[in-house]
Image (tube, rainbow, N blue to C red; front, side, top):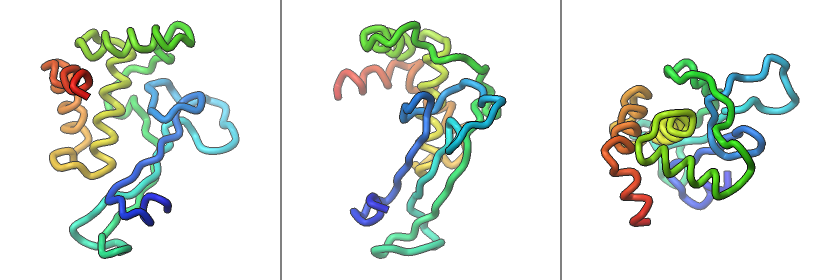
Length: 149
């Protein structure tokens, strides 16, 4: 609601693993816990046709649980081997250099799903959005963007 009130055209909240704000490829726990499941996403994005209109912007709300396995990702535990910030940076940079594995998969899943859920141009189809994320990493464009940031 705060995003809508500020005139944001798209917004996304993710309930990740262990309080994180990113999706995981880990399988959902067999024993249900209280609250929302891991990879629960809720948000809204602007539309050209109206579902509801606030401040003159047509928005569509959504909420869903993303199951990474449905998109071809193999289940994996959190790729970090310890709680070290340095180790997490190393894993992320290795993935952005194209090293395949759990960290790479999680980056692709998050980048592609976020683009898709927020309604980015060219990401209307989830598989296309995931392929775009892979191409950005594999071509080196994602790493260049990060370093230019």
